[in-house]
Picture: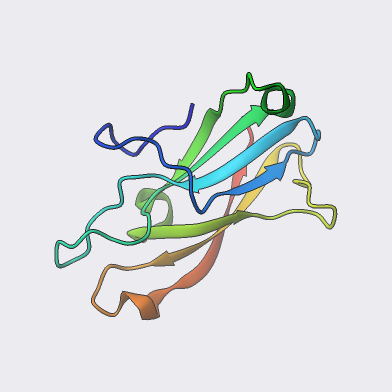
Amino acid sequence: GLTPADDTVPVVLHNADFALGHDRKTLWVVRPQHPFGSDDCGARNKVSSRLQIARMPLAGLLDGTGRWTPVAVIGPEDTGFPLNHNAAFARDPAGILPDPRRIRINFTTADTSPDSLWTYTLRWLVLDVP
């Protein structure tokens, strides 16, 4: 199922975005991974550094037997920024993921300086669907 960034905390599902896959049979989620890191002064960040993408058969959600399958994690090594948060899927006008082979994830990046609030920038990555 869903996993934390390390084993020191339980999985928390909040500030997540959900979308139906192109096949309309798969539910996708992008969510912040806990625990959040620390800023340049050692204080715990209020937003995530890592985003987890996972999927589940829609039938499993509807009948209560579903389990999330992790697909990817977006982190500082992918974006070049210590904070990666507020993620959302890019969808077609019907709200469906438009491409069966690629998923675009929109998210916000920031640094951890004392003025980090002013470093928020919207970015996106395209992931190949395994």
